[in-house]
Amino acid sequence: MSSASVASIAVEGGDLSLGEGLLAIIRPALDLMEPGGVIAVLSCSRQTEEDLSTWCRIERHEFLGCEEISEGKFRHLIRRGSLSVPKGERETALNLPLRDGMLTAADVLAAVPMPERADPATGFAPRGARAEPGGPSFPYTLTERDTVAPPQIAELYDQAVGAQWDATRDIAWDKIRPLPAALETALGQMMTFLAENELSALYLPSKFISQIHPAYAEVAMFLATQLADEARHIDVFLKRARVKGGLGISSATSSRSLLSLLVLTDFTEAAFLLSVLGEGTFLDLLKFIERHAPDEPTFDLARRARADETRHVHFGLAHVRHALAHDDSLYSRLESSVRRRAATLHNVGGVPSAIQDALTILAARGSDPPSVRRGHESFRELLHTMHENRVKRLESAGFTREQAETLSRLHTPNFM
Ligand SMILES: [Fe+2]
Ligand SMILES: [Fe+2]
Image (cartoon, rainbow, N blue to C red):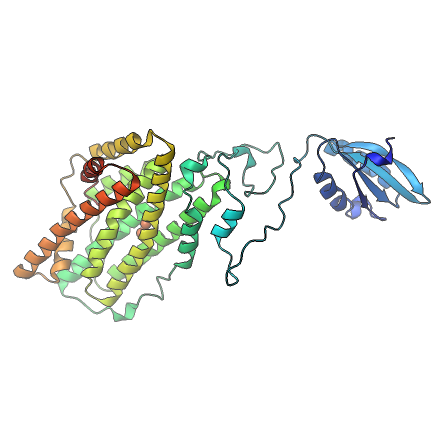
C-alpha cells in the first residue's frame, strides 16, 4: 500500500463502524479533496477495512489499503474518485450585513451574485450549492441572467414582502353604505372589470415561474409576491361589488383582449404587454377610481391596489429596460408583438361600452344630465392621461418619442 505521507487529511473514526455513522466523518473530508486526493481514516476497528473497501467500490473511490499503526489502531487510505461531487469550497458563512437586526434579499444577492448563464442540469440546487453531476436536465427556458433578472430584482422583492396587506381586515368594510342605484351599478361594473383583468394578471406571470432557472430565484420569488398581490386585488374588488349591489357584465372585448395576453409565450413580451403597457395603464385607472370613489373603503382599496401595481410596473420597466440594453433585436420584437396583438383586436371599436358608462357615472357621482356631462368629460380626460403616461413609460423603457406614440395608440382599448 501507499505510504501514509500521501494522505493530505486524516480523520479520526474511533471505534465507529460504517453502520454507526463513520461515513458522516469520511464523506465531508473526501469532499474537500480534488479527485485523486487521498485521505487517511484512523480507526480502532479491524472490520472497518472490509466495509470501507466495499463502500469505495460502490461510490467509485479507490481503497488503497489498511495498516496497523499501533496496537489495535488502523490507518485506512482512500483516494477520491473522479465521478463524485466536484470539489468546491463549501459555501462558508458570508458575514451578511445586518441592519437593525434585519437581513434583506438584496444583501444576500450582493453576497451571492447571479451567474450570467445557468445550467439546467443543476435542477433546484439553490445558487451557491454544489450540484452532484449526473442529475437530470430540467425544462427551464429562462437560463440567462440578462433576459430574466433585472439588477433591482431583490430590492423589488424586499419591498413587495414588506408591503403586503390583508383584504379581510385592512379595509373598513363596515363603512360602506347603500349608494344611489345608478352609482351602485356603475361601481359593481367597475369592480367586475377590475377583477376580470386582475385574473389575467394572476394567470399570465404564473405561466413563467416554472421556466425560470433557480439561479435567478429572486425573479420567481418576486413574481410570487405579484401573484399574491393580484389574488388580494381580485378578492377586494369582488368583495366591494358584493357588499351592496353585485357584479356587472364581462364584455367580449375584455375577453378578446385578455386572451391575447394569456397566450403569450415569451417572458419579456409578457412583461412588456402586461406590466409596462397594461398595468401601467391601470395605474391611471385606479387613480381615477380613487379620485371619484363614493366612499372611504373604495378609495382605500383602489389606493392600496395602485401601490401594489406600481411595483409590478417597476418590475416590467426594469425587466424591459435591462433586456433592451442586452439585445438589439428586442425593440422590433416588442413592437411587432404590440402590432400583432392590435391586429387580433382590429374589430374592437373602443373601450367596452359598459366600462365607458360606469366610469362616466362614477365620475358624475350620479345620473343627472349636468353631472353626467362632467363625468363624461372626466372619462375623456382619463383616456388622454392614460395615453400621455404610457408614452412617458415607453420612453423611459428606451423607445423613441415617435415609437412610444405609435405603440401607445396601438395599445388595447381594454386598458389591460
Ligand atoms: Fe393587480
Ligand atoms: Fe398587477
